Image (cartoon, rainbow, N blue to C red; front, side, top):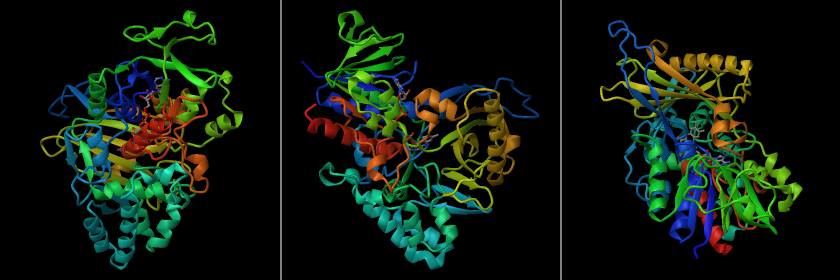
Length: 507
Ligand SMILES: Cc1cc2nc3c(=O)[nH]c(=O)nc-3n(C[C@H](O)[C@H](O)[C@H](O)COP(=O)(O)OP(=O)(O)OC[C@H]3O[C@@H](n4cnc5c(N)ncnc54)[C@H](O)[C@@H]3O)c2cc1C
């Protein structure tokens, strides 16, 4: 009989692990709490464009539905032979409608009112910045050489033989930048794309900075039609191999007997239909539970490690020290997003993104209050103008209540005002706007505090902040953005490493 693998969460990491395991012959069941969509941060969503259509003469609007992306806007390294290409080829994701972003300006970084391009292609990247910072050509060459070196070893995150972290996890990204580049403005430009990862000056390891930035210097890509297609394509492949992806199935517990995982408990409308479910009454030795038990030989959790441990009861024998270490690890910032439907023909479309900063702002040292940075992502329409925009900015977590509502409104005003410094006329071009906050993310992904990139990695404590896939519970494995690197590249590397470790353990 095939071994049974249950995957908790259908984010990219969960779906990729499910596909690898299904290919290896496991009977795979993915349980996803979202009622209608797989994908976690890959999800796209739709909104009715305009609730109150205005007069076409005074204010042109279009009716209909518009789509927005949630957590994924662009990726790096999809060109042949590049970092993500090999991985996405393995995962059957290359023939989706990927479109390369203009290599001359993937991201425009606006600092102190001046725009600087982050290009792609190693030579192009150096040449475009060296044209503005001619005395820094040598530093820029050293910068890309270091990125390239790290990027040529994407599976070396945990060092040879899985013995421990790559030594670059023990080096500071911030210090590397100080040593390599003399011009302060250029340092800020090179770090300006703040939505690639969290730029924390005290903690970010050089490995994370170099691996992720390298992929975007190789080449940068958008997925026409949205990130949901990645999730849907993975689900199709899992199902074609006999696996199941069950939506509306929230895992409420992980059952462990004699130190080994025996299954998960789940609740939801679709649990019990088409799944091998053992009801609680058939397993009297197990603790009283709320959901049905779905038996498993192995469980792979794609949710935050602290949320995973919260599902494991005290009787599982997980040491208190492990629990408290994992649960006390700080996470990256959470984000505020404004998804905006635009009036026709006002804001010119862009292929790449804009990262706009308030005067004097430093990507590595966020302002304690207010909004000092915003990412602007464009959804072009055929007429050459932008049809929609996403504005994304870091935001402190705020629990639900009246303070939350006020904070959300204030944030929208600040974010729009800052984006308008790079896109004059923006506020008059807004047709409709929908917002989300870290509270929204926490609700949807279960990540504590709604963190965008999960557990913060710390070069001063690589062993403590790089979470291994293996857990103290036999047969329970972790995957996803919290372990190693965030983003589609990082999560995909981790999926491969997680499944490699499962195979090596003979699980
Ligand atoms: C605003 C934003 C923008 C981003 N932009 C980019 C980008 O442009 N490019 C890029 O490469 N990366 C980007 N990222 C990062 C990237 O989206 C993530 O690193 C990656 O998608 C995370 O995947 P994951 O598999 O770790 O988990 P997630 O996507 O968080 O998936 C976890 C899943 O588990 C489910 N779940 C939670 N609890 C339970 C439970 N108890 N039972 C069942 N299911 C459960 C959730 O519903 C969710 O579907 C962005 C992130 C954010 C937040």
